[in-house]
Amino acid sequence: MPGYSTRKLSLTIGGQPWRLRVLSDLQQFGDPDGHGERLGISAAQWSLFGQVWPAGLLLAQAMLQLSLKGDERILELGCGIGLASLVLQRRGFDVVASDIHPLAEPFLAYNSALNELPAVHYRQLRWDQPLPTLGQFDVIVASDVLYEQGHAGLISDVIERHARDKAQVVVTDPGRGNSARFTRFMQVQGYELEQSRCAMNDEDKPPYRGRLLKYHRDAAGVATCPA
Image 1 (tube, rainbow, N blue to C red):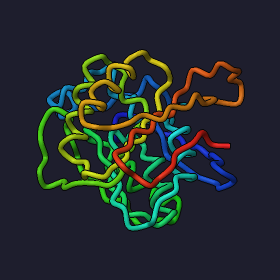
Image 2: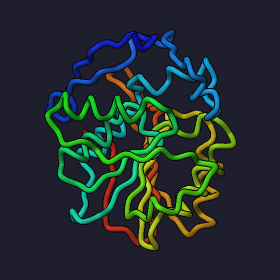
Image 3: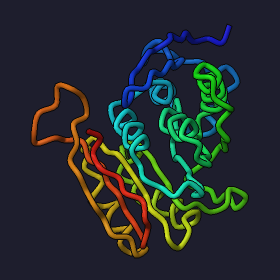
């Protein structure tokens, strides 16, 4: 027994059906050998990867509408369950999903198979440690990765290491308050920001707290709030 329980979740994104295996709830925990703890994942944080969050749904919807040439290399940071990467995989893009959680890779592989997709290429990535073999990307995407103040600097450093000269970065944020700090770091790297306020769910009313942040350095792709 793995020490945690899961459930199957059915979603529709842009008219397309998806099935996902997620953790049963936020009370699940299973770190018998202390692997997660050694990576800096506390018991309170352990289950967070295994849910589909509103910002993650927003990113998945945005990836369904993202306009690209088709030959770009795409990196998802903090992929968790990996829904956005699965959407990109179904669209035929070259995507690499990344996370620090030790269970992100097997959950992503299971969910790829559950949706009859080839396995998404995955790399375990710590934001505070360089990984030169990861390479560089034309597009970097992430959802709800600015939940701690220090993450703004960490994420911008990852982007600096792995973004090509002409790149775009798409981040969805539920309004946690650290996006302005992140934007300042990105501007230092020469990025311009296009920001949209988006509904996080069907119950949201204007002014929306969700934000779709698109940073670009002479990039051709366009990210807008999903219709």
